[in-house]
Length: 249
Length: 340
Picture (cartoon, rainbow over the protein chains, first blue to last red):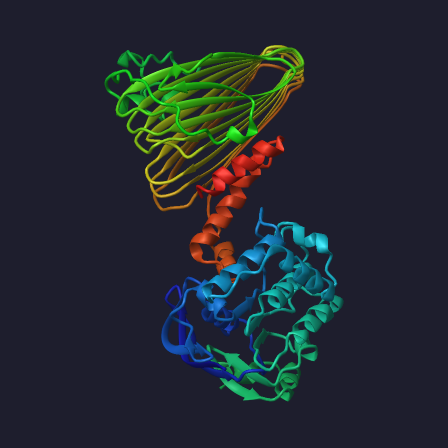
């Protein structure tokens, strides 16, 4: 279970999250929706430990383990995966090499045995087929020259291979056409599991037509201001965020 | 055209200082006020990094030749040229001369193997590439952090001659690797690449002077470097296209990363063109490690140090990837990976 309690986060001394409290039980998919500037990306970065996102108060734990005291790589080894809104291009490092290096680093950190090159190759082939990815793309430098859709697919492929237990999807639908959205969503849905939680961060309801959440939370001005079932997303789609903004209060 | 005054280790007056324009960033006199005592003999010891690639060898131990100092290549040959320094606080000079006969293909694998400390080494290499011959010179330099070394290579290309050079170094206290290349006859082709990875307070200075004296010559240069801590990397690249050297195509690039607060890069690219109908370009960039990329890599579970090494390696490997000889390329890759 993901437990976030009274989380305060500042970026360059400017408070962004102001007492955010949220729980995501194992096996559930929760959506966090909110207007621009509400702190949605900050939430993802804070949970994954990005430098510059300073936690000034509150706590966050995953399966009972405090996350905030760990460095980004340790959090990844503890199961946290942040799917970036704009995945980085890493020139000179073939995608497949990158993923295997990451997987083995995580396994080392957990005291598990590393995966051999042939065994990994088999896994990659199966996972890329499932996502309808051209296998040759995996030999190219990670994300370099990839389209928006290809980059998102590469994120999902990494999730499938790294097998994180907490998935944070930051605006996964941005930059995707409808076909790419369907493929990416199917990839995410295939990863649903009883011991895996997902936090789907999105501005638009559209993504939630494909990835059905168990719960929807509204993030506005740095806090969760409303929570409900999937119908809350439809309500936001129809009525907008106005009633949750401080000026409307 | 010489950027180097004739350095004579026995005469301190010949040591260049920053008052000489070409030595502005590598003040030899500052670190070496007096001529060092001459080095004694040294043992060759362990085989060098290119041992497994076989071929002939020229070996200098503290400047003293162990066997021949000259080599004439014909047909397809491999030569290992080893400069071994195992001196403490003393100085030595070595000089080798290499000729590739018409049509020859020589793989020249040069290593500077510094084992002593605080020594001063001066190495000179002359390379003549005859008509339609090809020389690939790969230089791996590993020296102690308190050593001073100056290496000067003079390369002359005849018509249709091809020359490929890759210098890879981790620096020293003061280190200058200088290459002077002249396109003496038409249609010669040169690639002059460099790579430096400097830690601590190390210094290296990769200086090249390319003189296009004949028509239709091509030169391609790529130098990349990374400095950590308080290290300092210097790149000076001068390309001269003389009157009559029409049809010259010369391109020079230097890209460096500063991976610390106090690292320093000095770059001085120069194009001097007296001919018509030439294509010349140079580019120079100095940047820092991409923090966003660094976080992305760490987020996938790769610890910070490893993530940095991965980015540095990816950045530098572009130079090594230009080496055409696969076996030598593998040795250089492994050598560099072990020093990231």
